[in-house]
Length: 148
Image 1 (cartoon, rainbow, N blue to C red):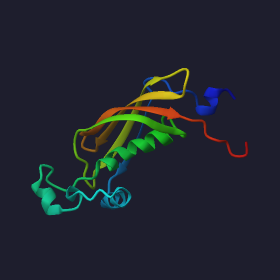
Image 2 (spheres, rainbow, N blue to C red):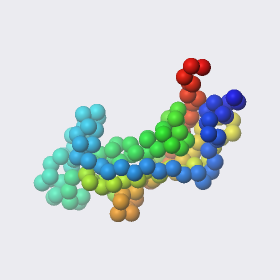
Image 3 (tube, rainbow, N blue to C red):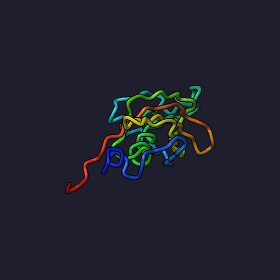
Image 4 (cartoon, one colour):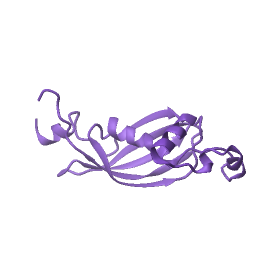
């Protein structure tokens, strides 16, 4: 097995390749993210304050919105063993509990000398609104094979 096959057993990604995942966002996601991060911004909890804000209702933390991209990158494309080296994300619209979001990644470039790929990243709400867009640079390391 050569170096590329060790990193990408299914083959090196190519520019234009895409992958996506969809999930519904729940109030429980806010609670779990707050436990993890300590982010207790009232826009995520205080219904009256959130109603009076420009958002008009409770919104989720940005980390919840972007987290779906972690799943796409680590599970689908580029795939297992992939970590972010750099992200440049613009949060365009809020995500609320009850929204279904789809995280989409598209390969923009793949280095031939190292397992580094450039991605276009997007999170879209179920109403078609882009909640997040930007780019990411990823590194994919070979995953140990059980029993080898």
